[in-house]
Amino acid sequence: MGKQLVPRLVRAGHEVFAMTRNASNKAMLSKLGAVPVIADALDRRQVEAAVRQANPEVIVHQLTAIDHIDTRNFDRSFAATNRLRMEGTDNLLAAGRAVGVRRFVAQSNGAFTYARTGGPVKSEADPLDPSPVSQMASMVAAVGHLEKAVLGAGWTEGIVLRYGAFYGPGTSMAPGSEQIEMIRRGKFPVVGKGGGVWSFVHVADAAEATVAAVEGGTRGVYNIVDDDPAAVADWLPEVARMLGARKPMRVPRFVGRLAAGEAGVVLMTELRGASNAKAKRELGWRPAHPSWRQGLAVS
Image 1: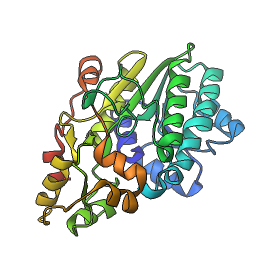
Image 2: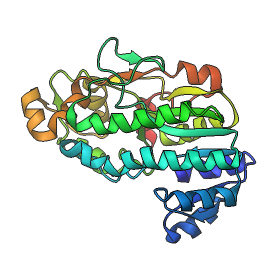
Image 3: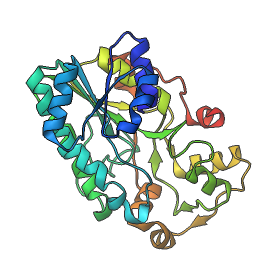
């Protein structure tokens, strides 16, 4: 996201300070147009020093540490990111309050977190999952903490962006990525009826929406997803067709549970999608890739 977002903010006329804990990233961030600031997001004193150095009007919180998602160990895959969404969020908010930032924009998750009841597509008014499976409970709790903290910060204008499942450059669904290659090789089956509904978003469109949230909108939550939520039984065979692969096999839920864990079964069979109507209406945002059907074909 940072590689997509920073140049867009710079082109929009913003002075951007980019926080990283690795000094090795300084040259890359400078090339993107940002002023690099070195700080560990989990060290409150370092974060406060970094924010004081930048003295920003707006903080954009994009802290994550997701390298690889293993659905059999979903909680482990998200452990570092969960900590950033809790401790990292609290540290950024404290630092932002100290310098009086007027707006705080934070990345959240609208792809895996909505309650698995009711209709297939959710709005921002719908609740997060109140009873997630055990492997997903810590991730949903961390998202809930982030959203409550940001929206409850009365001293600033808190905006939460619930991104859909990313695809495009640098994502887990980029050309040649492990996930795409699994589909190509026929190793990504449809579990059960494949009724889980996914909402995707191209990472470039998510970055554009983030710029829009820096400059517009009001306190609240926005789903940042494309126009085409789709059940696994629809999107997975279509992506296989795009790749010239054979149609994915179908396996029963108990086989899926053995191979992908309980979280994997939820993602395949029970997930709910999200509506982008509010983001279109209030942020004036329109995804350049309105459907994963076209976006994945050209990404």
